[in-house]
Amino acid sequence: MQTNPVDWEQTTPIQGSRHSYLATYFVLFVAWVAVSWPAFAQFWWHADDYTRAISFDPWFSVGQGRPLEILVPYLIHQDYLLQSLWFHQAIRLLQAALHLLTALLLIRFFRPLVGYWVACGAVLFFLFWPFHAEAVLWISALAYPWAAAMSLWGLLLIGRTERRYRWLGTFVVVGAMFTNQAAALAALVAWTIFHGIFFVQQNRFKEGLIQEGILLALGYLVGGVLSRLMIFWIHHGAARAAWAGSVREKLAFWVELNRQYLASPNYPWVLTILLLALVGLVVLLVIVQWWRRQVSTQQATAVALLLALLSVLPYGVVLLTAESSPAWRILYLAPLLSVLVWLLLHQLLPPHRWLRYGSALVLVLFLSIVIPMNRWNAADYVTVFQQDQAQLQRIEETAARHQPPLHQVVIATYPDYLRTWELHDVTYMHYDSKKSAFLRDWTVVPFLEHFSTLAPIPASNYPFFQDPVAVQACVTLCLADDQQQPWQLLVMPDAQTLCVCP
Image (tube, rainbow, N blue to C red):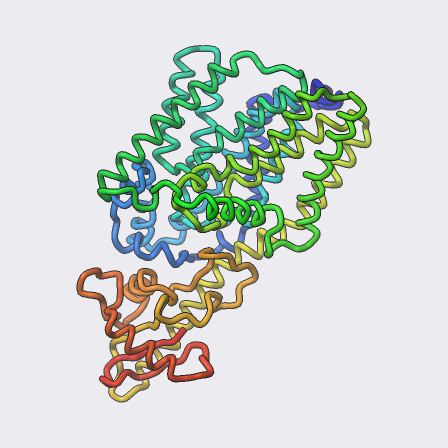
């Protein structure tokens, strides 16, 4: 059992100085942007960005208990008004910068406990998880890395000895809850890992544990209560923040969240085996060392408790509320389970030289798997946007060729019509990650208003929905074809409107 960072950590020229952190940040930032470059090289929007782009509504964020998140729809709306590639890229670079800041703060937090290089190696599992693009590249999800970075900064302040910094840290955690409640749990997860590893090292709790826990809990309590009050104020009810109803459904949701991280259907088999094998190795080492009395029962119990907690804490907010979609952005903190596993392995394995080389080989294997996945996943978002544009051009050309030319269009949308969620044959598809704008009313109407000369037929009570009567008439035409051919273009009975069956 290691009680200090391994010897070679002490002789490294990088000792955790400010300059070394800046260098680390720069290298990792360049690497992450390079890996995700297809999403930075050109203009694209996620389908769910269109509504926010056309209409800036600050009360939407307040209505979710996230008043600081107002910056996100503001940036999207400015992006829409400016139509400038440099501003568009600047927003995504800001998202990447916040994601890298979260990773750097994790390194800073764990370094005194395990050493600089072990902390860096562990954080790579978080940084390069292949499906972070939803939280880090989708503009509407900017609040995820922002809230995570804020909460970790607050945690570092809470760990300071000066009282004024500690109270400031609590205030920052409240701010993180005002940004995104799910990602704000980053501080709680990191704090749990830190004190758990310390107990495994020393067989005792670290001094200041209770004080830190109280201040951290106070930040979450105040932020959570005020957030819920805002939600009730705007919606006159809990809306999506309602407490979870069925325990059985939430247990199934918890299983699905962990499956999506450890054994996602989108993973190649080797990545699933690697992630599960690392967890299995920790469990095996603890059992063997406990049997040989190399670790105490308390230390073995601490490891088991840590693994159990890290299967729950990253999803704490969504498990407590009515949220039921295991979207990739919801899993933003999920890779911290692998961060914990990596840190535990370096406590349980003997500090021989082979550990250094073995660790490097495992990290190389992990990166060789996930870096291409990161690149393909980033490219998928651009593909969906470009394919939507291509289909829109085809629709406009068909409408223009009709005699007389058609100037109105209605799209057969979900839930009345759905041929498939995956219209554009992307590499990785998962829930609402890469849905075409043509699939749903609240995405296709602003999409058409922004990019097309054809006019949608809006609903009378809500401008971002299509007229339900027109949609139903279009759906009837689409369903008349038993073969359900993709992208049928049919003229409506009024001879003035084009019906599209995606």
